[in-house]
Length: 141
Image (tube, rainbow, N blue to C red):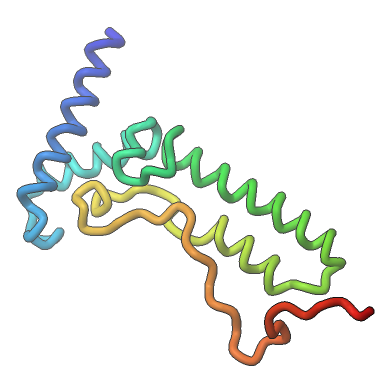
């Protein structure tokens, strides 16, 4: 029973990937309902299994678990940074939290159809213009 389920899942993902290569120029709204269903099945499978690495190479254990681990590690890193800076550098703390919590939390059917690329760990926003930090400043002697 287990191998039959695995084969059905593998066939569903293979079908959705094969259709993604040929139907990339067709807008999502104009695709047939059956194709959109297959893309949705592929997205559900990719969110819960290691097949998420096909769409987001950084996420091997399944996309949702991967995103939760990125968010958890960013909280730990932000607390560590906040403790070591003494609360003096809140911009860095916000950037660390942004990197862990921003981005796509699930793989959508549009990601499976290759219309969009999932970003589990996006780049932090640029620093605000006119900020306090002006590069390296040596400590006083």
